[in-house]
Length: 380
Image (cartoon, rainbow, N blue to C red):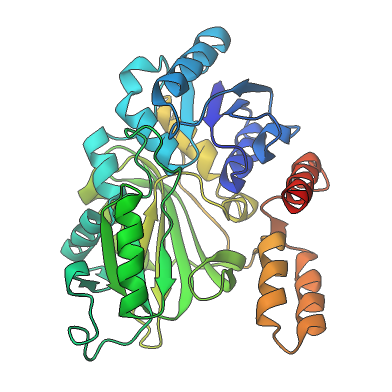
């Protein structure tokens, strides 16, 4: 079977998917605007294709994807980022291969921050309280403690030519900074959503669901370090036993959303111990190599379901460690836990025995590609 992954060039999730699908016997191609990215550099990638970015030129993006499917017989096409997911989902009837998602309305509903929050509440999952962006002034926020979280309801808008590839979620210090970020989100074409900020442990539950909401493969992880600090992605994490209180509600949420395929639900667990759902990634995600290393090959399960194969239930085993080394080194340089040298030394010690999102002795080219890209950026 053949799978095509389309991305913008330096997606750690796309690289993890290439490695995971190849390990399951899939022939994998990568489509990106450049051939020098992480996934394109992997030795597990069979072919690479020049595919313009979906957010820059959706018509050219579709034409390149269709050409790759026609010329090389891909069975399934995955989008690695939200712009690619949304473009492929909307244009699925013109792709010529399976786009492995539920209906487009279900896809949008699941990744729309406001609709996701409403659906989560209906199945008993807590989310951060939303604030009215029009009421962001100090007097209206008496009793609210900064910082605040400012999101765009959708990270990407590939239907708008020239839209940015992603509108990032930011944690900002107080109402005035939140107002500025709300205006920025609007200028970028997004619809802002402001939420109260909860400090706590970052936890994620990832699952692949079949039609009807049946979970066939899942994994739970808890982060011990994140980058950027306070509201970033896992740069150190470990698999833990799946908490049935989380997985049961997550399954109900995904069923209510009509979801099909991979979803990573991200939670923050503050001091009160009650997890708050903060996001749903309906795509390959940065720390996904951890799930595969722990025995839950999420991309392979998703691809198999997409082509109609039976998938036996699989759950990641606890106790497997993960590191995003670049992010962890950048974190250590800022946080300096116990001092800079001690934090850097601890970061390098943690690297031994951990599975990495980029670094692999069996597949070293992606790490070299990342080093070259960082060096070129520094020169510029």
